[in-house]
Length: 131
Image (cartoon, rainbow, N blue to C red; front, side, top):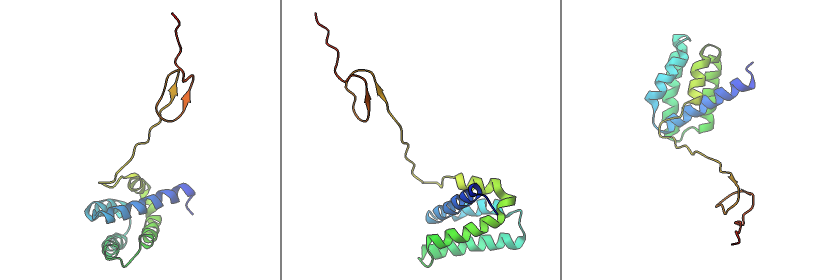
């Protein structure tokens, strides 16, 4: 039985397969999946590539849900995991092309003065200098 970390990696990889399918990036997926299943039998390789095309078509036509496709690929990847751990981890951490990302930063304001936004630490009144 796989540990929780391995299951999370496999689920992430299966989710990325859906993201690639949704963007029509089947060729890129075929290359990644060939690397994952190359250690298996010829039958396993053929099954994976056939399932890739069947699932992409069914998903595009609305005959199958994303959850069903994710479950199917989770099973495929679980069977291949011990031999293809590095390739599955690479797929799980891959960012499908065209995926938008948001960088969330943090700003801390220290000292005196007026600061725009979020938390202020220190005196917000300017010091008056008497002449």
